[in-house]
Length: 436
View 1: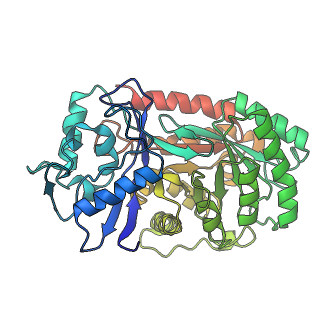
View 2: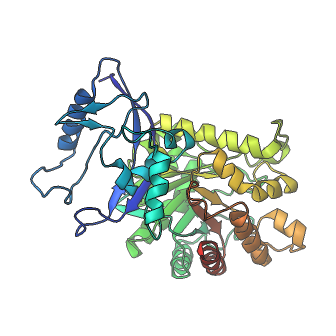
View 3: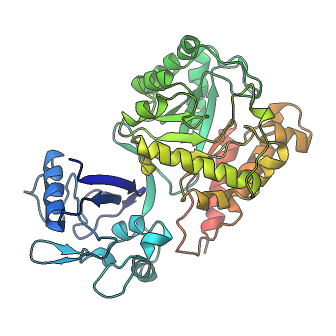
């Protein structure tokens, strides 16, 4: 109605149910709204209850029992309060609810907000609550179509399925749909959490593929994967909104755009129109034909600050277009408009980039890339899997302090050709990092 504006969203978290524990896990998030100067807290509450009803919530169940949706006013930035029988702001139970405190305390600014009539802050309440618990229970999730979720309780692995004749590592291997689907099923058996299907090579110097050809390569494969493995999580690797739309209709769950939504102006609106489809936003300059001539970075901190700033801008643009942060993943674009030295700098400082972009989930794609070959002497792409493992695992470990409860646990996806070996490496890495 013009008197309420969405400012931003948190990420989504899964937590064990509270109060009534015989019910499914909770799915929780926080949104920041800006209301008109004349809207009182009780007026906002009325609107929220109307929204709950419109979404199908029934008020006939037990208090704190299973419900489709539950919208509460938590607090006001300006300290506005309400204390009566109908509404209390700040919400009186914030301090005991991890499922509220975690999304509310994602950044330093909101961690300082008061959660009670005393001076207790969100950060204070969260630290005290975690001090009483043996472990954190809130786990970041990524929503998917058909009521499914990816859960970041571990490092996720994305298997690459290129149905192209000219990709640098496996070009031409899976051009026939039968072979492509067979390989997809093998990747799933080896532990892939996501299959990334691409019909256009984006290696340096690659020519653009016609829409019709890219469609012909990818859509039948996605349809057959969905038929044979209804539970599989499938990503479409494309710069084109038309392909993204067709892929989603065919059964794809995620859109992976190497241009970060800059190549096709219709990409953000298309993805936004599907409420539970996440988008991976990669940093890139130019096109595959021009990108390797665009490696000059003028920012004071060079490639790191430029990549982080650009990714944050794309994230904000996506959110403004209707793709909330809880549906976003970012990718620093290793090998795309970067020199070998710049790739190494980005990998060494990956967790700095994570902080600069507000702890968005990161997809890292170093698999078999040219800089590994130049450093190791492995001229054949398929011989670069050991280097792929090193360049995937080491960056995720540098600068990570799992004992620091003020920093959210990192959310990572590794995009690789060799799923089996990388999966094993990621399992061991996760176990070491989480060991106490």
